[in-house]
Image (tube, rainbow, N blue to C red; front, side):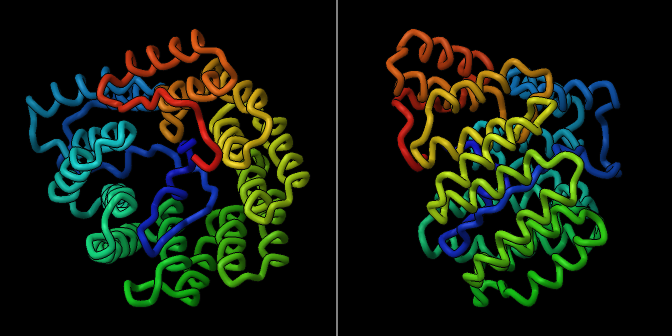
Length: 338
């Protein structure tokens, strides 16, 4: 099961980031190279949120054929390709967006994320080079907009997990987390929890995860972060409690349901509950770019296969391909740790 928050996938051979964060699919500040009108941008963002990759690619390709210098269209197309795991295509489009609008914080943030995802699939030496690019893009994103919470989160994660040889460091992470506290208290607590866990101070990490829950009026995502922590500590009963709290507090039936299901699959627990959570998400109007519907359908199909429902599984696989024809759907049963 690979549906995780993007920040949990920003990894290299040196960076195995395990952090929960709700990364909003922002369009970013207005660019000086902006051709998409507001209506078109809203439609494409809706395509992203609903997982309609084919539609989004068609609209963006048409927009770019009319204006190849549209930085926003390049960034959005990058994100569609990212959803489909077409990383070379995503890399090209995000680099184009940065080239056209070098002063846009979110464009640098997304380019850093693409480099992070590519590094996770790269060999040792390539990953080493990409690590420096990741750091540079995240640092640039924060420099351009010191109030960009998502950029602060990703940079904190990088500093926490990366070795000093590529620019990581706990002191740097703590400093960024302190800046984050003035903007988003809950996410600052989460970052401090990750820092404490990296230092093997698990008691403090647990306390910070709980503080993150207490600091927000919408704690579902923070509960899934705590569930992930308990899973790694092999505290199964506590993990199950946190998962149920996440599901019960996600009143919008959004991405927290997907993240909770992911923890169940990774711990090889209650596949029927995981299936139910994914089905609830797919039935919700509050789907998100953070958990593309075609990916969720593909993973749901894998779980259904595991439960012996080959017909239901094929239905989900077919639906996923109809939404994103270039997404490589795995048609084998879900396994522990995926």
